[in-house]
Image (cartoon, rainbow, N blue to C red; front, top):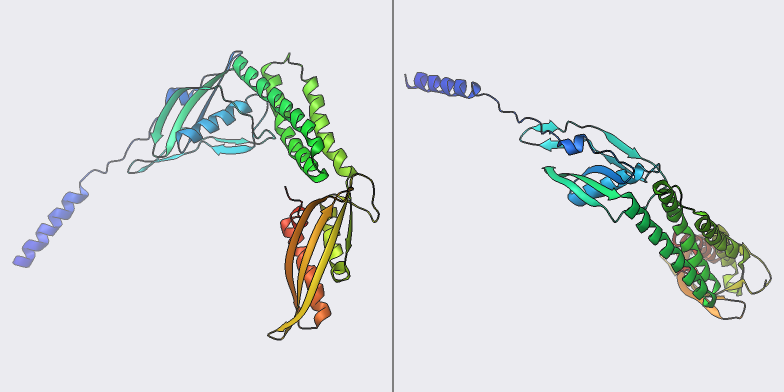
Length: 332
């Protein structure tokens, strides 16, 4: 009788549990300012964005804003999201924005956040605006200051050695891609803007690096113990687009000198060649502008000569991995 009572009680409990209605949270509705964003006009740019936090949402909104100026940004962001509310609900707006272009660093600093909302866990929504005239003036000021800085550094670089000057020109050339894209944005904001002066300056900066690189020549010599290392150094210089010559070639010529002292040893059945390598680089006035010291141990089961060849193989690997400038002591 007792067992029958327990069975009936269990059935009643299970029946009560199954009769409870399952509660499902309704999907959240996006705010109108986000789902129906304001359209940009002749005076003001508008954009919306979302992200894991407010800062990322603003960044995505700025990326989207720049993409409306007939240019695109090197980024990709997805506005599809999932919200956890006890159950999984999908945000009503499901759109993927894939932005592909060469603009990577157009900075919009004068923007205003007109709306923001923490929509769900780690999900922020924002709407921003930017005055076109103010944006034009800020970008114009930015490129003007950049070119002034480049001009000032160029004037100072006459005191630098060849490689330091080349390094400066290379950095300036790399910065030109951003400046060229900034000019595109400026022209979109103000079609009457005359960018010919800046376009000419961009070309001058780019040509400055290419011209100096084409004029620099290297020669490599070594003591008897280091001669087998010359091909590794020469190959590294060639990969960096430096010209290799056998004779001294004017004021833009640099000489690399290799000195090695190699000692024979044995260990666990291997023949070892322990090589202490000294590298110096001199300019046309015989001033040392770079130097480095390396200790490389070659090994072989086939004798000392093969072990010494292994030193050259290991040096070649270091050049490929670390770069020739670092190996010969010219890394800036």
